[in-house]
Image (cartoon, rainbow, N blue to C red; front, side):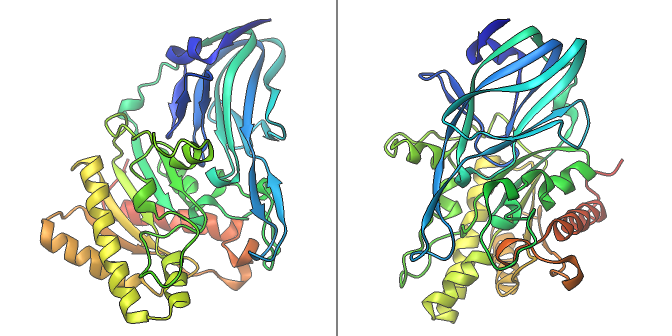
Length: 371
């Protein structure tokens, strides 16, 4: 069995989403939800040398709850199948995992993606060992539809694989592949990227409390600020090259946590005005970084709709000031009792699938992605 460093394979693999290439350690990290890599493999056995950076999280309501260590989860898909052939926790900082094995030589498209979110631990591949060969996929991805999803825990698929509403969840109970974002993208036959963090806001609050997370405004321009800060590389943040991949549509589902911040700060009117300003500025940022091509779809739901009218107002003011007409708004249907709940009252798997279908149908109504 021959081993190949990941750097030797770069010309043969297609990276999915925002991946962080640590060439000093010779590891490609794919930390964002549903990011990863795909390629064609011909042979009988493929192993990957995988590296993990675990995370510490509260096992309940902070700051009184104890902390626990969590590791990332990944999945392996063959060809165009939507159900993974392998799903595994990377439960140590370095281990060798089986990607594919067969008694006879076979040729398959292989996709490796991360199921859990960035904050639930980082994961990367340093090398492959194989009886066979990796070759580049021949499909022309430049002609495929493309989407990007920017969001919070709802987009991450927070606890969508548990039905215990009153507790936090383990990383193995978060399935980003079955979030509404990934479901909608598959229904629309689109390639997609996801930039999502549980608990994240659009921008800063009005200063009465200190929210524990950086807002999306300060994460979005970078390849993976969460990873670099976990490695204490605060002074050398890597900016994302937005020319590498320009989506046709960018879906933004933010505002749920901003509502929580406003409630905690207590000054509702000032908080609403601040949110409108933050959202307006974030639209400016997304447009400036991505250029004129993408349609921006501003959504909210399915947990909280307090700021939806303020979101619409921010979009209205932005459109009026910039003459940018490629910005739309959409509200997901609320969680239905019969669908149940995921962890901490988040959307269940059933709700996520329904949300993805709603989103795909609305995108078709806009005249986008019609066969």
